[in-house]
Length: 161
Image: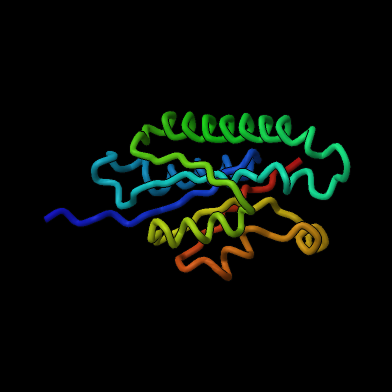
């Protein structure tokens, strides 16, 4: 009887940090293996914000803008997943599930871990300082404390000037 593979989820957004995290993960966990002997089933997940969360409480006229914002968010989501697919193909990783889920990234990622019974969640790190992290919140920090699996935070090395 074949042993079922563990699930690895890699979170992607439109940042270079998430692209780096995906590339790093593929290089270290997938490329040395053929797709049949890879130790993980790979899910690449993009959390798409809802149009209403982007607009917020914009007041009168917000309803008129909603369809345009929704359209733009769908285009961004498609572009993010297409880029992730290209990265996977460039690393010869074809057995991958690409998924976009609407919602706050923190919740989307933790819920995906539960849904797919993931063993590991990989997130990039934007490298925000303490003030930005306090104001914007850190998805990686939240997931490290709330996801019910191992969380690997991949940091992009700083470039030297």
